[in-house]
Amino acid sequence: MAFDIYDFTSLTSSIHEGLATFLPPVGVLIAEWLLVGISVLLFVAVFGLILVYLERKVCALFQQRLGPMRVGKWGLLQTIADFIKLLMKELITPNKADKFLYNLAPFIVIIVTFMAIAAIPFAKGLQAIDFDIGVLYVSSVSSLGVIGVLLAGWSSNNKYSLIGAMRSGAQIISYELSVGMSLITMIILAGSMQISEIIQAQSTGWFIFTGHIPAVIAFIVFLIAGTAETNRGPFDLAEAESELTAGFHTEYSGIKFAFFFLAEYVNLFIVSAMATVLFLGGWMPFHVGSLDGFNAVMDFIPPIFWFFGKVMFVIFLIMWFKWTFPRLRIDQILTLEWKYLLPVNLLNILLMTLIVLMGWHF
Amino acid sequence: MKAIFHYVNDIIKGLSTLVSGMAVTGHYFFRPKLITTQQYPENRSTLKMKERFRGEVIMPHDTNNHHRCTGCGICEMNCPNGSIEIITKMIETPEGKKKKVIDKHIYHLGMCTLCNLCIKACPTGAIVMGQNFEHAVWDRSKLTKVLNQPGSEIMTEVKE
Ligand code: SF4
Ligand code: SF4
Image (cartoon, rainbow over all chains, first blue to last red; front, side, top):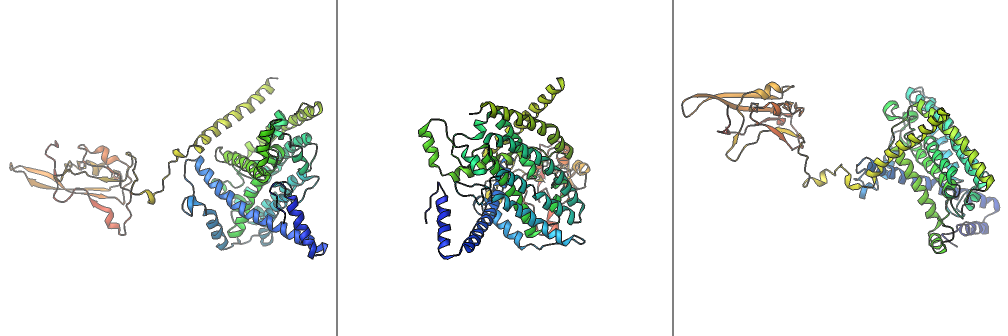
């Protein structure tokens, strides 16, 4: 089996040919679906656990604490132990809850994250589907998650859940706009919505450098709006622990709670991955104009490490926000969106269009 | 025009305050030496409590088993929740005078809130805050302590 860490197309095509030798075309298709599905599932589980651990450690360092230290060296096995504990917990359904919707909600939330991951390019040739409207697909699919949140809040028959879900709905729907607009800004620069083409367009320089001022503004807006989309602090008033116990997932326990928990972290990954793709060049190595020696060294690092390195950088930024800023009130959140982010975004789109038309970008 | 200026000013000010907040937490993040929490049972042998830490009320005795308590009862009166009981006795001094001294300085650790009032009130500085904090016992009665050691006497230099 041909394996090339710099280009996964040879690996995937050799798997395809290998399957085609002993399976009919339909069988090959189903087998590939299964393979992709299992890899996404494994990735979500493993990466989710790693992120939870990282979040606890990063948070601890920001607050001058040690964080988990007991289970394994530096608490490395802590999240695995937590996960086993969650699996063994009793699944509780509250009295008078809407049973069907109550059980459905966690699955909607987690399935939506799987759908979004399908379009994320991990490295060259390591992308499940490369739609020609990939950016639109990811942003529309990930906004479906709010349905799961609203259903969870509504069906739990609990006032805290309902308030949390309603807040989350108001917040996600308004910030969806800002995410979309900052995506549009970058699409104007890229001239395409296909994720592979957007990355290819950044082979000479990442958009955040080539697009300079409007790209930086769009990056900041995207980070703010993306943090709000994932319901993370300082925009976590949908699950504000101090006032709503846990917001929309108050009544969930065991593995259903784990689904919500995992979905939150996978959404964090998706937002960071989109920021990486649109602003930081996806899996493209860092290149400086004509410094060939430097560029060759950068090329030597495999794209998959570039991708995860950049994603981790963005994730770290978002965690930094969460553990620094106090939670916003609902009116402050809506003011921030409608009075600041939206006008800035609209002007930014104009600026970007002007720059692209005049050819002022690099 | 002025409104636009204010608007832009707001945004810049807001961003700069956010950045200054992140600078503080970032400063902590990259200096793990500043971490204040400790790995308690592991570092038990080297653990050193801060001087201001209040673990329990103790009465220091010197090598001759002498303390500074006169048995005046001021600490008992100052304790807001009655954690101290002073029991005194009359003795006869070698000169043949009658004198009131402390018999038992009873201290209920289980009730004490470690408020430090008794220590501030004591006119002779006979009691201080100890640093021991491992107070767990199997029996509640063990939390009632007699602070003056058996057979102890008051130091001669303490003025009454
Ligand atoms: S520290 Fe406060 S509560 Fe404790 S014995 Fe002294 S006065 Fe009473
Ligand atoms: S400890 Fe101090 S205040 Fe209390 S009885 Fe003794 S001398 Fe008086």
